[in-house]
Image (cartoon, rainbow, N blue to C red; front, side):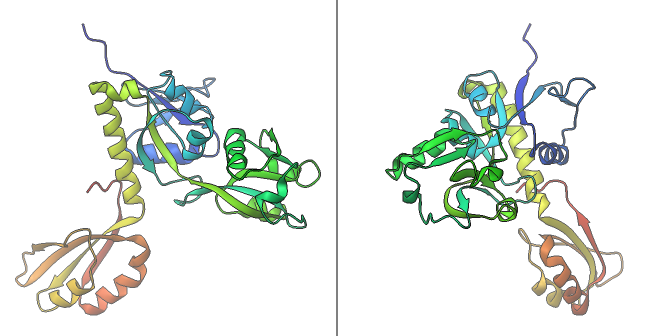
Length: 294
């Protein structure tokens, strides 16, 4: 008897956890954490066995086959040099849809103007290997020490510089720090173990997860829009409408009237809807989308 399919999936614990759970919910999967099992979320899908881990740990667990797949940052894949299959780039983070930056930062009052000025200095970071490779590329020898987070408070009393990730830069500004250089830009990734990816059943499941997650992300910036338009105004309304393809037109029971439906970027709706109303559209309805899969 064939064993039931089971995908061991690593999910990021910490700042990305809430956004990840929300994305999966929109994609169709709900996770809940039973009392006393804070690291073992249970999915409403018997084929998924999830575990919450620090995103720093997930790439190596996926590489070694402890996990079949996982959600982590490109920054952590690069830091540990994990050999994994990158299934999908997921452009979301804890606050925005923008990439995070891994940056070299110093105090505003420090004399340093480039990485070259940090020769012989002390740098604190969670990205020890990434920082060491970066310094080697620039021919700089400096002391790199591992930090358990909160690097910003260590400058300049304890260290001369830090390498940290930042999404908005607000924490750096709050601690009177400035950026000397950007080591890399990072987005969230869905990754898979190479052996799991070579397994047809597991690959199909991972690809299905990827498809639905991407569909949920696509929908995040889009809304549906429908309206009624008389044929005398149709050309004027259609001229105003952007769409993924073409708007859908359906004749109504009232002769000469059409139902028009399309998908637009949410950010343009506030300016577009008044123009459509002026062009002759009636009964305009804007509605949210869960998933958009081209």
